[in-house]
Image 1 (tube, rainbow, N blue to C red):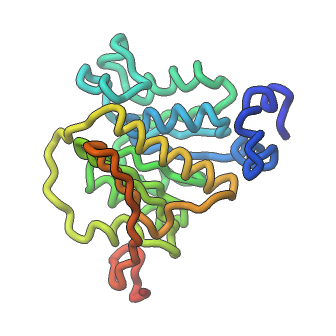
Image 2 (image 1 turned 90 degrees about the horizontal axis):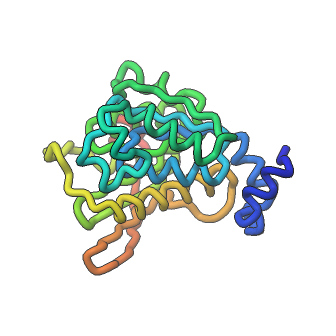
Length: 246
């Protein structure tokens, strides 16, 4: 049940009829897992906490470095050398003390991914490499948890919402794992744009309104501010979700 504090704090979003008090109650009861507390995970987690998501689990095994600070908004200069999950949890707690934050300082591996995200209603992809995304994708498909993918490279960004059993999974879109530079060019405002798309998708998914980016990929080219979406389909023989299905 929403308290007077809740009704006041979230008044401006509750005023949006498709959300309303009923949707806000769903957000208050929700559990979102944010995988990666970096350029995507930081702004995404900030907006989810601000929106009143009841529980956030943040997962990352890395520490804050100076080169993170152009885009990873939960981390400040004084946090350099700290675990990202510790730094992130501190800021999220200051932003919204009502949100329960669970910090997990672990690397996502095939043998622990399912346990790390178990109980989550939505998983946010705040990762920066294909290999770990594919591991997390498989865990989400196995557990039936929506997986909201986001990615950037320079001035190019993309996002889609993966609904296991209904839409293409990440493996459908990434049949061959491409070689990847250790450090991907990243402009802070674009990571924020994609992270905000992911946060909106999570809120819509949890509260049950709007049309998700399910079966569609959004592309943003910030070099000329072009926004486009394309239809994407499941791969018939995808080793993760296909099982011979179209």
